[in-house]
Amino acid sequence: MRDFSYLRATSADAARQAAALPGAMLLAGGTTLIDLAKCGVAEPDTLVDITHLEGLDRIEIDERGAIIGALARMGHVADHADIKSRFPAISEALWQAASAQIRNMATIGGNLMQRTRCPYFRDPSNFAACNKREPGSGCSAIGGVTRGHAVLGTSEACIALYPGDLAAALVAFDAVVHLGDRRIPVDDFFLLPGTTPDKEHAIEPGEMITAIEIPASAAARRSTYLKVRDRQSYEFAAASAAVGLELESDGRTIRDLRVALGGVATKPWRARAVEEALKGKVLEPETVRAASLLAVEGAVDHGANHYKIELAPRVVARAILKLGEAA
Amino acid sequence: MTKMTKIPVHLDINGHHHDLQLEPRVTLLDALRDRLGLTGTKKGCDHGQCGACTVHVDGERVLACLTLAAQAEGRTITTIEGLAREGELHPVQAAFLKQDAFQCGYCTPGQIMSAVACIREGHAGSDDEIREYMAGNLCRCGAYPHIVAAVRQAALEVAS
Image (tube, rainbow over all chains, first blue to last red; front, side, top):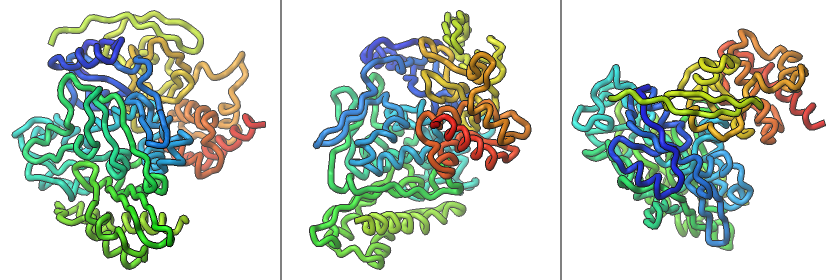
């Protein structure tokens, strides 16, 4: 790991300003950044440590929703009683992510800044071509081993998967990122790769995530995060679904439905086509399974990741039906 | 790239205070092992994937390989060397011996530090829960069934 200078921020404003300088980066839990510095992917000149700032780790919940401070740790949010009762999908997405140690380190703001696990991106000494790392250098993944790559939201420049779990649950429930006074929906915070896969987030130099706001809803209260993976724990999703369900008073007609996918796309993927197809319909297994196929509309595989196109709709359907049974 | 100057880092480890001069890039793991001779904390993958370097910072289990030593300043750090009290093994250490919960032993300090926290967090209520919340500690020898048994035994002892 190349050396850098270390600056401990004493205020959020000072941190933003210091991190706006060329070569400077914010350091929170470090679970992505220190790892990528060791891989030679991140080469900061200065790290601005924000983990000693006070007051940015609060979790505030009322009838309007939850506001989670950017420095709240993943593990604390996952275990928070009101998050578990009012936003079960958020808690489930968090505790099924990474390991207990990493969840104690990683912050909610840093979680949104998590980078892809694409093995070509992570290995600059063996794979020089990576448009995400070096714009214009090409893509080593296309034509390579693609079992863990995206099938939705890809471009000719990049097929790297967005690996996170939490963000899928956040986009399902219309969460909003606070960048100081600026507000931006989480769905818009994550950018499609297009021709600029190096630009992943709608955040500018001098900005810092300060909180994430999740509006309360009946669908969020009756929600789940279903994660299917190669092994039972401590693994990224092969395909996952954050789903929220609100039924009419008849107990069988769908009033509101939220569906977002993880593990299949280049960003957390809201599946609005599934939601629209099922709203107003009676919750029946056949109807749900047929509508869930819309989750992968437009999907393109690169060989070894074809299984995700079959798997994702099944995960969506299973999650919806599971919520339907839990009256 | 100019060479970075060393910075002063004050660490509170197992109740002892240490004043160090470190390059900013030095991880807590390397400071423990190479500067302070506390080699109980192991370096496995050095990328946050194996859990061998698990220590406690302010009472919570974290990975020393992904923590900069400078970040740990002002925190209370506990390593495997700081677990026993006055020559008396911690109940989790004793349970690992009793249940024969290791083979080569390389992952064991990390397993034990993780298990102490797992029990304290209240995540050792069933074998399934223990497996889930100990998943961040890999054991290449495959001693998992005995590790689960040790955590279960220690959790019962701590509760009683």
